[in-house]
Length: 242
Image 1 (cartoon, rainbow, N blue to C red):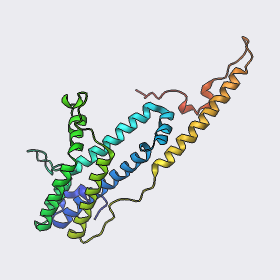
Image 2 (image 1 turned 180 degrees about the horizontal axis):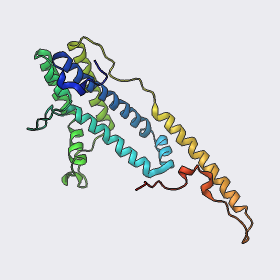
Image 3 (image 1 turned 180 degrees about the vertical axis):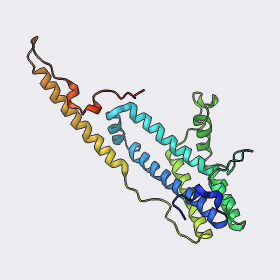
Image 4 (image 1 turned 120 degrees about the vertical axis):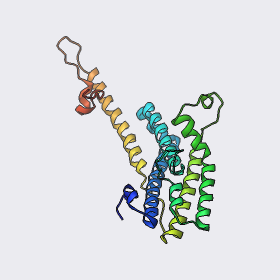
């Protein structure tokens, strides 16, 4: 089967179709787990958050919000119904995967497990529906707790989704899968580069200031330019060709 078999889902049937849908769910779960690990590695420790904020408090805040909500959206998509209302479009989801399996006591158990996961993920779906996909007035009122969730909620739901997918692979495809990829700690190299980069940057600026202050005051004096300490592509804000 191809690396992205779900792209040819209409040409597949039976077990091949089920395996293609399962492969999609597995690949997306692996991405979500990597994103969740990176988020935890970046934002769960005050000293690490300080490194991010020292580089740029604004960018650190944007990254925090964006990464958190990308994870919420990804989980909700996988737990969505296989069809949205009366539309003819199908969603690649756990629901579609379970519906593609031959009816049995096992698939009934899988359906029940998915329903329980959806119940556990209700707060995530509230965030998706009322804060991300739409802007619900009541949810934004001061004191409202609708849609406010935590990384702990996310981790519990992710673990449950991984357990369910492993059960489906074992019973329906007779395969043992390792749902979660090895943790490469991608955020660690990023934080180290920021930490030492900030230190080096401060040293370069201090050296520039010393040089600047050392220039004799006269009309013919040529003051050093701060931009020269940076490579050309970092000397000014980025502007598109438009």
